[in-house]
Image 1 (tube, rainbow, N blue to C red):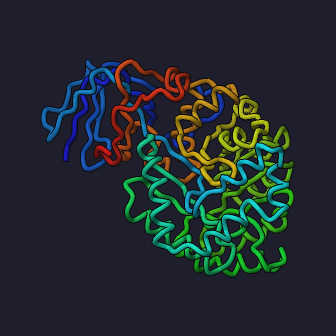
Image 2: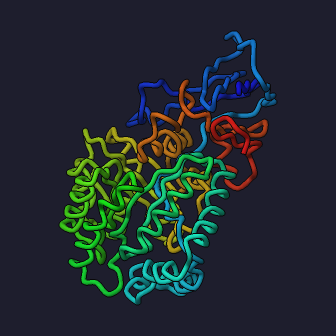
Length: 406
């Protein structure tokens, strides 16, 4: 199927095929064409150009974009969307002044989600998670990383990974899978025994997962625990990612860089030492402003990272306890409003750089010939500043994944 989009007011997010991530001053650059067209063939971007470029003569379908903006679909490199029910009771606890750490210390938080997940069938988990995926897709997200981590024992972690694998097989979105067995210490285990159990799960988890992750954080797992888990993951063929520095200066960034982590995520508690560790590394610093917003904690110093020449990604952290939403347009807005990123910087952070942080920037995250035609077409009159500025005004005319209207 050859589908031609004509009369695009602005085609935004154009990136050469050789560019896999944006860093430093390039974070503020967005390639655009005005009065443009774009050709999709076989679900991939085949060609594009402006009014001065000859339009391909043959297409099975021609779509008049009526001057709307066309941009790559969002990429969300950090989610926990396979969970059972919700934790609205903890929402009241937060309103009443309890901290994330206090809720966890009382046996709530992640452990509450694990208890409910244990009682929930795979079919029901799949149904609930698919609703969340479909919601995210309708809001313009085309690539989603999904973590396990609410199983917290071998049987239920594998149940989660099977559910994610089923979503991967049935969703039009690109799905990447992360084994987060070390999200918290499972009930009935000592910490050391649980870390050992997670390491033993690794070969079976590797049948489903692309990445291994650990919550390296005060009150959860140490850098020594992280080293054990990441080494076991590497032996099983899983590339590291890591939750780092959300609640304290944990050393998680440094251990992540040491083991070649694709991303280090959260970074609310980070500064010059973490920036120095990330220099000249393959690791993408990833900030989760939805979590900072919901927990009412300071955001990480994203602008300092960019000023030091690094790139950053933004992701939703969609989960039931600290970021119960997966709208990446809202994450883009929070990047601008709370983190003082420019609209262009935040745009690159929710598209190409978030694709990099989940290992798919060679396939999506930009307008590049050969990449998946995962696209957002807006109504007329929108631009890359107005979208995050009018952060809840409907702006999407149509989402296309692999060139097909969703």
